[in-house]
Length: 344
Ligand code: GTP
Ligand code: MG
View 1 (cartoon, rainbow, N blue to C red):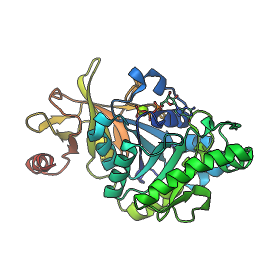
View 2 (view 1 turned 90 degrees about the vertical axis):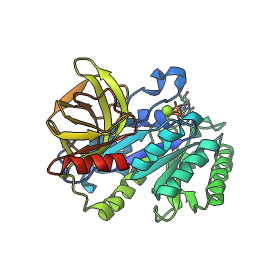
View 3 (view 1 turned 120 degrees about the horizontal axis):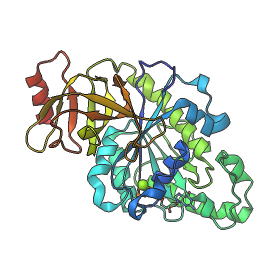
View 4 (view 1 turned 90 degrees about the horizontal axis):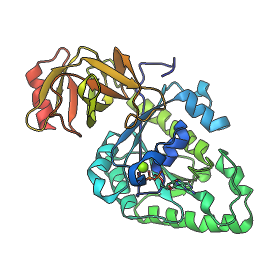
């Protein structure tokens, strides 16, 4: 992604929340795309993955994030569906995450899948920030495109600010009922102990710099704790989707969350019946800032290190399963790796 320390593992950030609360739109704002507009029925139906380079984050965050302050190559964002029927996909996305954004529509407040997402985050102990989205729909709101939220919030009329405050305190109260101590993010000192609530708009971009700044702060802390992860080890990942790709037959869209995967590696993939043992013919990487779920231009690469979204082309993948593990065998006994995959 960039020329920062490539031995560091890119943190995985899951975006979770109730249907239509603005998860895909928020990611669209960050990566500069319009994925949400192209979705059937405007509903996300699969898990997505987008590698956002540090440079893009710093551009978007303005003064709040400076490239020189971070060693990370960027963040890998995982988009999840909010519709109630996709709870398996939400827990899968949550399980992959190092960090998360819980998106809550400020007007709609906590809804069933907000609670479900919060349960996942609680269970997995994932640090997160709350995006109190659609702040721009507050009556009387005066938008400030892509601006940090505090000056914009302070510049609103008293009535607009009070209306927004009512909704924000509702959200903070709900979080508290669920056992999380939360506050408006500019009052939070320790983001791992207290949950920061960031008023924002995926439409106008207000507050998006602040969300990115909180995530980058959490990432630095997360990295210190997880520094020992060896991205040179045999790759491990999860299948997002099994898809036909012209010229390659059945391929796997995979999130690699640990180690490195190389072209030519022998891998074991969970299948509909038995684990599949095969050899990687090609590794196809989406462009930076591209959503793997909708991307059709891929760059062929020799290797990918965690965390990354990558398309794997290999023989015999027709019976591979979404959600199944992918393991590189490398110098291990293939039967041991098969047993590992069967046990998952
Ligand atoms: P699912 O993936 O189906 O759960 O939905 P989602 O959370 O990804 O929501 P999505 O981004 O598709 O947005 C739903 C609708 O809300 C779309 O019509 C967006 O344009 C709109 N929307 C999202 N964010 C904002 C916002 O900040 N302000 C306003 N006014 N509209 C927004
Ligand atoms: Mg969506």
